Image (tube, one colour):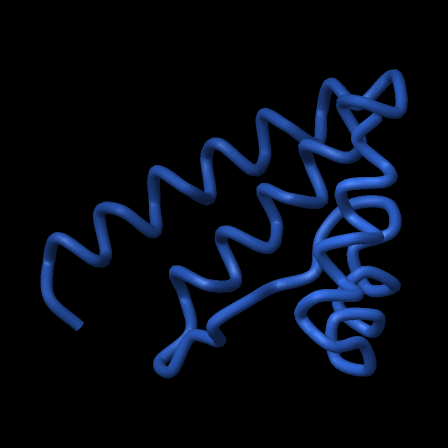
Length: 81
């Protein structure tokens, strides 16, 4: 592991600790969960393409895996109206 990666991991760890100490509402908690996933991606030797973080993320990834592109796009667009 090179020195830049070690320094970056240290900064991410400090950021995660600061996020977890101030989680008082749902938005803060979701940000903390996402931050934890970012740290996991940085620390991984072989990071995944996608990490599921936040409310409903795993459900969306599941739907993405079973629906066609057209159906998935239609579903996502219907939720943005």
